[in-house]
Image 1 (cartoon, rainbow, N blue to C red):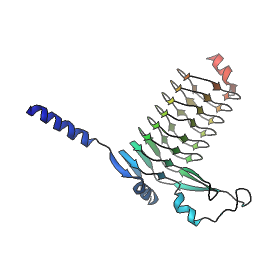
Image 2 (image 1 turned 90 degrees about the vertical axis):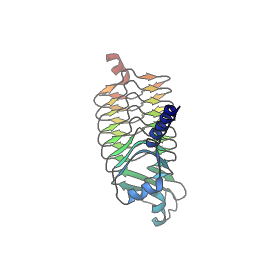
Image 3 (image 1 turned 90 degrees about the horizontal axis):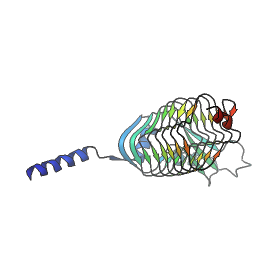
Length: 256
């Protein structure tokens, strides 16, 4: 009996030692604002992470009369100069680098000048990275996107990986620009995957990727490696006007 109690006690201590800590999103954003490198692991993040700092920027902006006659750009960009690294973290609320604010008419976007890591993470809600520029190496491997996610118009200047990543809702990379090789190896798209107009300028891997619904690669351009070994698409592939090293998608398949 004594041994059993000892074992249970040790197991409790072990699980407690490795339990995730809870960190407030507001504390993280304060550190971002103060220029501190963000390096967090084994944590649950409570609250919305707004990398655009929209609430801070809005009061300083002039009111726009309309979308079409006020002139100038309606996009307000925030440059995040800090390293941003999250490993084995859970985000219980939205993670936002893109916010279209209907009332003011402004769109808020965050760009990342340093390394960005969201590895082994879970996004429970929205993950919005539309229009974001990622200037250094970026890692979204082994991550789960449970809510809406978008990388539409995003630009990736350096190394980037989405290996072993799962998307439970429709995922869009429409107009995304990958300047270096990107791997989606072993990833799963549970709903539609949109890569329309996407440019892969140094190759892409969809090795063993499972597309549980449609795959849209219409107008997609690939230069370099195009690895689709073991790729599975449950429904339709729209490859109209797709170019793989200057050749159509169908011609590429015929040569394999």
